[in-house]
Length: 147
Image 1 (tube, rainbow, N blue to C red):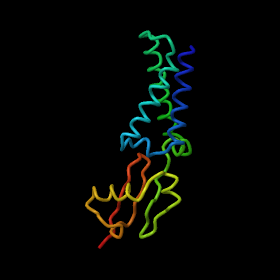
Image 2 (cartoon, rainbow, N blue to C red; image 1 turned 180 degrees about the vertical axis):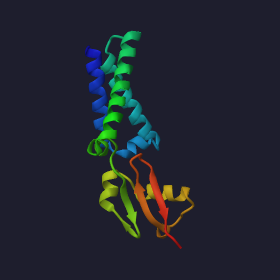
Image 3 (cartoon, rainbow, N blue to C red; image 1 turned 180 degrees about the horizontal axis):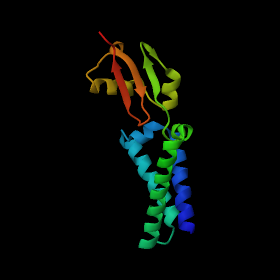
């Protein structure tokens, strides 16, 4: 039973920490973010399974985490506020020619991050961007200005 409780705690703790850290960590766009995610998982799995390295313990921990994930998905379908807590909401980083510095700072993004996403769409100048939106998935959506 303690394995199940530790797995439940680990799931909710990691979910909370990922929300606190922000979407950039979830994007895993750089080696720094990938290292962070691997360390989180590796550290928490040690606390969940402890000294018991049996297949039964591993299966119980994985099953519990899988069930927690299914429960969260089910609650997200039924509760808008819970979905916003878990997934966040899209954030407008650039509207017209106005950068949202507060949102950029809170999201720990730089203009270079937005411009990198813009270049992927063939946009090289800020003036050619109508909107830049930091999506819930951690990606940056760039909408070009109409000519």
